[in-house]
Length: 302
Image 1 (cartoon, helix red, strand yellow):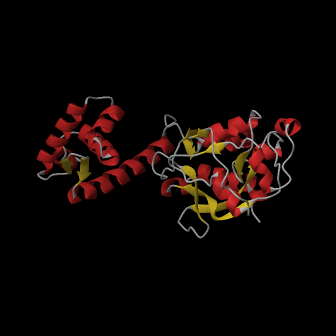
Image 2 (tube, helix red, strand yellow):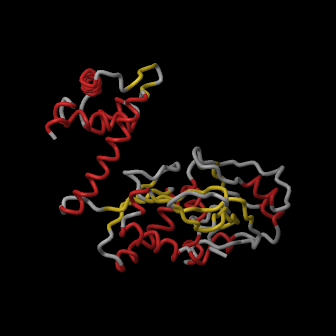
């Protein structure tokens, strides 16, 4: 340890370096560590001077790691992870949360209605749900997440959940006040609720209608929501017909909050996958959560 003490200016410099290397941003590192950006820049310069080599390359686009910086970051990151895991096993001060990242719609309509039942069965497993508008990589901050990927997707610590199947959905109240569509062609006479997510590719109404064998030339959206959660909220409020996804809409359909006005559905070449970080996959509590998720979604698998 005395040798390590001589190799780094201070233990604080390691935390500064790790945050800056992980975010590739001195500004974000400063925000995370609750210090000023000049303070981060100064600490990094002193660290580089102490190491005798540049750890970052600065340019107009921000900062990038040099090869020595990348090698050092790999070691620091792995050491921090091992230290975190060990501290959690010997102290009660660790939060011991399993962090689950999901889209807002999946978090609201699939996870939230079921997690309290999970908690009753597994009171020792604490879960933090992080709603995000884009796919995030499982890492030391995110333990578990759900992605939609090509059906032949393969990766360590990933599990097939169900195929991506897309179909029209609406509220029961909407069908009471509007004639039910009898065929895909009838959808043009209904208020179709449109969604266009910025960071997640979703099939839209014209694409779905064409795949279902209909004519989409007259479908022109008047209102477009940039978050699928807003689309579902509009459908739940009886404002029209939206597209529903197999996993996201499962609980809404089971509880009759939404119904299928047409039996037509499109199965794509993609599927939902559950992913866990390498560290989380070795965690007993994480395995309990993964097993539970797969059981709850079992009815969606052929």
